[in-house]
Length: 380
Image (cartoon, rainbow, N blue to C red; front, side):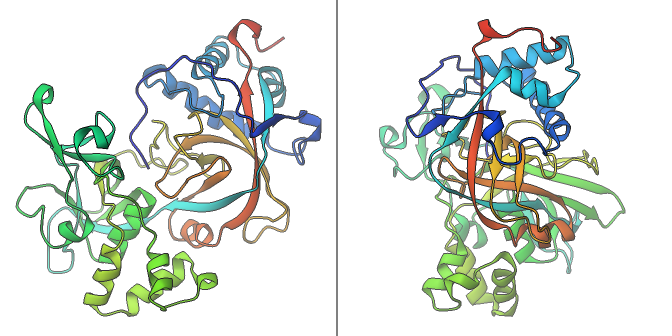
């Protein structure tokens, strides 16, 4: 749930000291994974890189080398997906335990017009809302801001904080014509912000999709923390469903006061792309693949990186340990750290019920592409 990366960076930094090389033979579950499914998700990344290059991040995965692998794929598809990954990547284990959670794409009832039933808006990105062009302290802004309101032409613009969630809930954007859809439940609006996208079953019978288009730039604060601090629930009881249950039971004033503690506010773009087998277009600029797309810390991980995620636990309802190769294709405000991930489960109610139960200790093994000058045609 972030702005698509559009600037190529061909630097190849040294591997961080927190990563160490391992052998594919020593990766638990590597032999038994469905490498073909991971390869299909990787191909979508390659398609996206043609028009939207990614940036090299500090985990050592070179955007240049990833692009070189993608060029080889376009020239000659491999016979074996597993052999493809083993030939062109070096596995590097992150030397700290991490955490995996789940996310999904809601499907919600919506209207194109405000009615007595549908009166809670999803907003398009305001034209004056931009990513800050320089560090916020250089612009005289709080160092927690990442986006802001631009005032004046770009060359001589000044910047100020954009209204936060509480201000927008109080009407800061009223009368600007930014509403692109109306929902019947303010709690659904909030969770659409958390997930970053939604499928909308419109009252006219059509199905549309809203994708992330921008954010207010204020820090993300999980409202589960707010409820714990208020004494409304114990930390071990905080889940997506328990939070929703509390919000549903609260009166409007209490509900809105808790929602407003998450100052981050999300804006959307409407699309007719509702492919049932794929998710929304993610931060890397490609559609998400259920079970294979991973949201990561965008400041540490290069989009498009294959990452093998290993846990002693299984996903909810699955007794087998999670041992799966995924592709870094998305991000989120709460996804922070070298081994912190969010697996995309899918779309709809069932996916949401499963996603809300994913909370497991994991280890990350990042597949780092070999240098372009070491690469050979992939079918050899």
